[in-house]
Amino acid sequence: MAYLAFADISFLPPLNLYFILKYFRRNHKLHKAIFIPAIAFTVYYLMVMDKFEVVTCSVLYASYSYPLGSFYGFFYYAPVLCTVIFLFNRIKKSEDETKKKLAKVLLGGLLVVSVPVIAAFLFLEFHNDKLLAVVESIMCKFAFVYAICLGYFALINKKAIYE
Image (tube, rainbow, N blue to C red; front, side, top):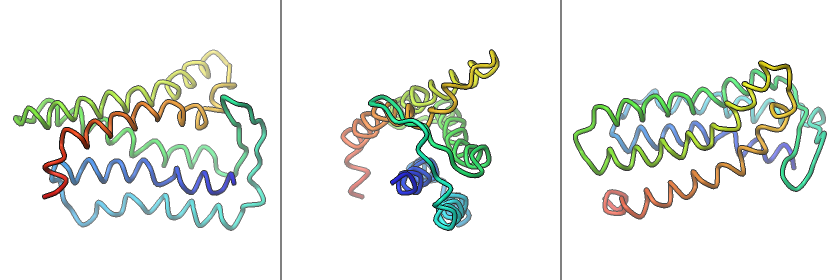
C-alpha cells in the first residue's frame, strides 16, 4: 500500500505544473518531460518495493522509510516550486483579471500545502527532524485546501474547460 501511495502522489506535482502551464497557454513539447522523474521513481520503487517500510502510523500521520528519500524529495518538490514561481510571475504579468484572480487562489492553496514543508525544514535547523520524517503524510491533510482551491478554480473557469 505504501508503494501505491508513493506512485500516486509522485505524479501530483508534475501534473499540477502541467495543468497550470496548459491553462496559461504555455505549450511546449518538452513540458511532458516533467513526468520523467515520477515515472522513473515509480518504476524504481516497484523494483525495490521490499525496502518500503511504514515506520509509524497514527490517525494524523504516517512515517515511511524508503530508498533515495532525499533524492525523491528533490524531484517531488521541484515542480511545486516551479509552479509557485510561475504563478507569482503570472500574477504580476497577467492583464486578464480572471486569470490573475484564479492564479492567486491556486498560489494561495499551494502556499498552504507548503506550510508543513517549510516548518519541517525550520525545525531541522534546530536539530528536530521529527516533522521532516512525517511531512509527506501531513502534507496530504493540507492538500485538502488545495483541492478546494482547484474546485473553486473549476467552478469559476468552467467556460474555458469546455472550450
